Length: 461
Image 1 (cartoon, one colour):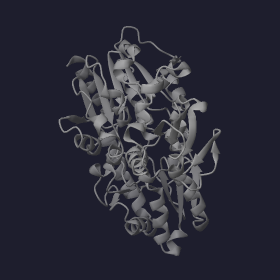
Image 2 (cartoon, rainbow, N blue to C red):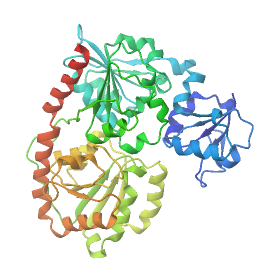
Image 3 (tube, rainbow, N blue to C red):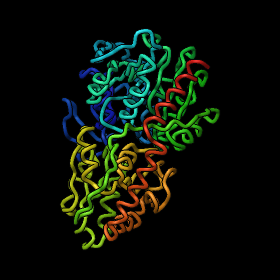
Image 4 (cartoon, rainbow, N blue to C red):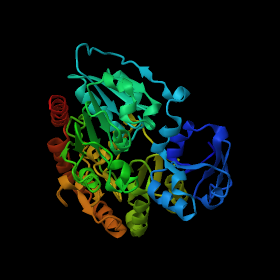
């Protein structure tokens, strides 16, 4: 089948291997800078030009599927020739290497006789959701025989196997439905981490209990085909939400769904009382994948609003990937921001060390349910400045243990940062109270108890 692939970003890199090179007519992208280039041996063209070629189907490889689908319809592409990433399995599921399961045994393992459960993670990259999956596995492994299954490898695999947790690589899970993967029946329970498993759950064997742990901001629910969501059978499905945002977003499309809170928890990487050492420069940082919803561009806009004499007394660090479209745009802008550094991604070990070097964490997100980085910063007794669209704000007290400002209000964000520069003593006092938030809400023993209780209830219901 001759196909056009629409999108050349993260989803393209994750899914294009399902298509044979000889079947790909061209790649479509709205970014004029990419048009005319050759990627993996295929031309990148504007969508309006691509749909004039000889093709049989267009596959949208992007999280912005809804908007791109509407664009294709406007360009005259018949609805029945437009498909998304979760339609790929109808055409290619089970082909060759993509159907194989590769197993990576744990370094130390003693799970004889324990109930087997599988935690499904979209990938094992260093992002908040995948880190949460690792913590879930670690919290459950003493009581259960835990296997983490993922379609996409990453550096967290080694973390898991060294912690005594087996990892399976199963690319087929990118495109399969639960009911179509017989070997999943080896497990008494599936623990699906994040909203991305919605299509996988749209055809279920309801005899197998599933915990669906939602972390995702509301904007992600607006980007998908809602008709697929409505196919999900809620029987024997236990929906857990990391704060209020994910559950509320899901109920807009599945009003009959009922969810309970299950916040993540973090092992205490700073068990001793940590005293921030404030130098001449106040050091601000934002940590996360460099994407529009994370709002790193808004941080630069806010810095631009700050008077020069305050900017000169501060340093700013953007920690995250450098290959996204937004990251490349920000890199170009940095010529006007000598006080800002883009560090690239960091390993978990380097990131935990990095927290010791900063003073204030900034989460300028346009939408973010419960970023782990904010919790990690509070664990290290750092105050956070967050937008009011960051779910962590539910647990903060304005001006006491954190600062909350109106989303996209870059002047308010600038004012909050200036406040810490002008009154550096606030960093220590507010940071010590932020540490109490970690201890009260996100401490590891609390998480262990809550997640084990969730699994016990799902198995015994």
